[in-house]
Length: 304
Image (cartoon, rainbow, N blue to C red; front, side):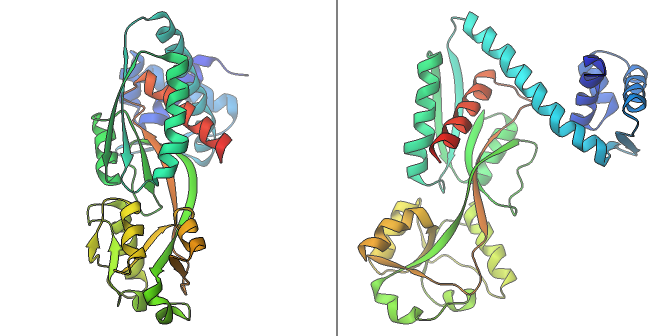
């Protein structure tokens, strides 16, 4: 490292808040000191890292590259300090974690919960509070500090806000229908054609509804849900009983398709890619939640 750690520390906080005044406040120093340090770092690196605006500063392309690496280093420092502090503390830890109602249960039950179990085995004495809500509510709760972290379903259409998002896996839904509808789908179907059948799905306050509402609008039709269900298990049950058609993650539908209870409907346009992510508000800094987040990411990577 060619420059002082303090230079990078100042850079990190200016880049994090995009505001020199806020960074100076966090660092307990004056704005002129922060500005001088940034100028020294820019001179050493031979490039501009920030551009001033009326509301603060923005990162240059070189600044974004540096920040991408610096922020991960600082996150690991925070986690390392937290682990030392928590290992020395006998107090009970507390973590509140939310699960999206659209997160596939097999992922939660067979990957996320075992990761929590591994964390508990290593750290113990942690009081966990679990909430199940639609993704938009989870994002809001994490942002406000009501929840420390959440496992959500998301897409490029969903805004995460200020929370840090770490992607667990990516997936696509598949359109499924019961045997009653087999003759209706001998050819690949358009979204407009699909909208003519009873639709089984999630309520309007969910990320899933918002995603398909947007997707259908792009394809020239309106999206509606005729039968609202709270989870994918019930969606599968309704489809199996020929009550309507629905969209579920391909992995969840595979067994029922193999058994012949339902079939996959081919679509003209591929359904949008989605992802399952862990989000956490780093600014609020529950150290235990940061450690658990790493356990979830590492365990998921191993299993998938």
